[in-house]
Amino acid sequence: MEVRVSQIAGEPATKDFVEVRLPAAGAYLSVLRTATAGLAARLDFTLDEIEDLRIAVDEACAILLQQAVPGSVLSCVFRLIDDSLEVTVSAPTTDGHAPSRDTFAWTVLSALAGKVDSSVAEDKTVAISLYKQRGAGPGSA
Amino acid sequence: MRNGDGPVRDEERGTREPPAERADGPDGPRHTAEGVDGIPEQARSHPEIGVSSATAQPGAFPVRGGPPGPSAAEDTGEEPRAREMVTGGTMSEHERNAEQDAQGAQHERNTEQDARGAQHEPSDRHVQHDPQDRSGARAMFVELRKLQDGSAEYAELRNQLVRMHLPLVEHLARRFRNRGEPLDDLTQVATIGLIKSVDRFDPERGVEFSTYATPTVVGEIKRHFRDKGWAVRVPRRLQELRLALTTATAELSQLHGRSPTVHELAEKLAISEEEVLEGLESANAYSTLSLDVPDTDDESPAVADTLGAEDEALEGVEYRESLKPLLEDLPPREKRILLLRFFGNMTQSQIAQEVGISQMHVSRLLARTLAQLREKLLVEE
Image 1 (cartoon, one colour):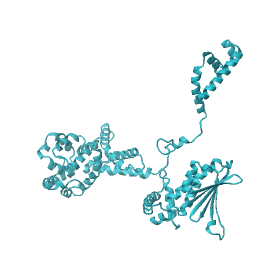
Image 2 (cartoon, helix red, strand yellow):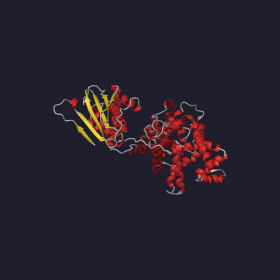
Image 3 (cartoon, helix red, strand yellow):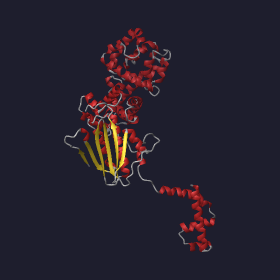
Image 4 (spheres, rainbow over the protein chains, first blue to last red):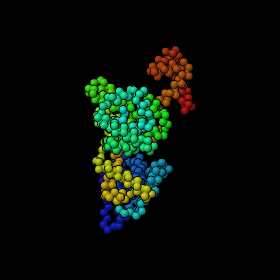
């Protein structure tokens, strides 16, 4: 597992990101859940939003893990865009299917995160992006 | 006579019952009980209260209901006051449990007396709580202390005393019922507290047993919450932090109409954000969930039941069950051939010999029967 934090000199905060990479296995999801919650808490999300994010990230990873290549690396990138947190989870998959949008998991995901996107790259890497709006007014952190 | 039991009862008696009636009749057995507890304290307070009830009664009584009367409390000073407070505490309990608890019945009567008709009182009282009234318990304690520790009589009397006060325990446990611990556990813990207080109670002090037992039992319950409440033990600092966070969260949610942020919580509690996060994390350790707990309600399967792979043998069960009636329907000859072929493991020619037909015929019959069975199985589905 590794955590990378961008260090782009002189760039504005919009280019900053935090990336967590972990083995694409369910056992490691708790690490990501905790990291998500910790990050969101420091970004001044409310307790309810933190909880939503935690579940949403978990759910997105669960969708990915269904078709992820065993032994591959699951990557999760957090970016702060204006007043919302963008979380992108991606993993190489065996099938390269975009997650279907009429499943229960997807419904849960969009209910929790507000806006959800998915994409499939050439190399069958599937990515799911969540955008969680910060509700508590201008951040005071 | 029973003056030592407490000012309230004395006062009520003063007005409700003519003194002559008290001295004789149904009160007989109680005399002996009272004879046993020759407690100095009681003897001391006796005349004082007697005087006070005689003098202050008529005027004071109508007002009486909850707090101790000025006359009685003043007369005997600190101790009756304390006694009064505790009996006051147990009173509400007994109001709920009245039917189980003779003591409770007595208490209740004390409180309700103003409301109820005075004429029921004497008979009611004498019939119901003769064996289990307060002085009865007191006498039992005095006797218990005289018996040798470990003897059969001692154990019996001790059991009796514990059992007699179980309703008190149930009430006290029920007070803590909505705090996430099963009521049965609480009752059990509280009963341990009761047993401890039965063992430690000193009747010579002149305090009611319930006065002594209530704090002990409550303490035992609180200790249980302290030691066992958290599924994973966290430092006391965090336990308290969690409580503060819960309160602050509720308050801020109410104030802003949304859940608070970590920053707001930190500001409110005047601690650092890191500490808030630590407190929030530690809250996860408070309760754990068994894998056997149903998912949402009692109807849904437990988490443990949803794990695991499908048992492929299950399909076999289905086939076997649906095949059974079909096999029953086969004509005897076909059934025999099937049996010999698949259970006797015989070749077709062996079967031919056994049944007395040609091997070709056996082959044809077998093929036909199996085809029929297959077809019917599919239709059945």
